[in-house]
Amino acid sequence: MIARVPPSAALSRAQFVAQYVRPALPCVLPGRFAALPARTRWLVDRDGRPTINAEHFLELIEAQGRDPLVDVELGRMDGASGGAAVPGDAGAVDFKRSQVPLSLFVKMVATAPAGSPYSQLYLAQTPLLQALPALAADAPAPALLPAGEHQYGGSAWIGRAAFTPRHYDVNDNLYVMVGGRKQVSLWAPSGRGGSAPGRNFAATAAAAAAVVDLEPGDGLFIPRRWWHQVRVLPG
Image 1 (cartoon, rainbow, N blue to C red):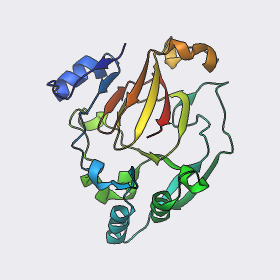
Image 2: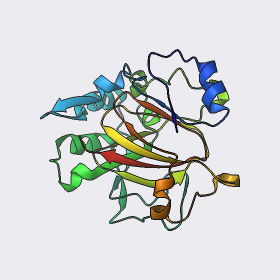
Image 3: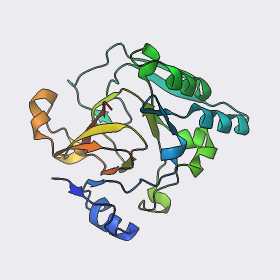
Image 4: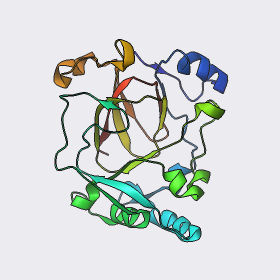
């Protein structure tokens, strides 16, 4: 079972580190990031569904005077997402990656009809706050994170439909949902070096330590070397 820490529960940085970071225990933080400014600045309601607020991003890009290039993916990821993937897990299907200006990405995602190829574009594991520093005011570092040398940086994932196969990362992760819904499956490391809980995904899916559905404003702490798989949920 994975601990769930309701937003009403007192949880200081020291408590978070002592109870979850140091012992490497994952935990769900439902609703704890509901007040994150990015939740209202990065998204707009369009035809009853949240979509990226292209105007906000374009204004900041214009103010910066430089349109950064970002890595954009089309198709299912092949597991090489910054950690170690399990050999034998599902591979890429028509997977492509390109560099495009951030302005072009947000325009395409904001205007592409559901079901079109452009609606499947995915900006994955991108240091977006470094590419567009003005966004830092929208997504300040969570107060729960250890200070100083324990912070290695932040990444953003933006897209309507995506699947990240099972892998682990060598650093701790605090995953925060700005919008949309995702399902994360978690497996505890077994043995040294975060060895896999089994090479055949289908045979080990039922052995997941937890399957967590994340809503906007939720957080999930994933300790280093914990295996995880991420899937975008409809709605």
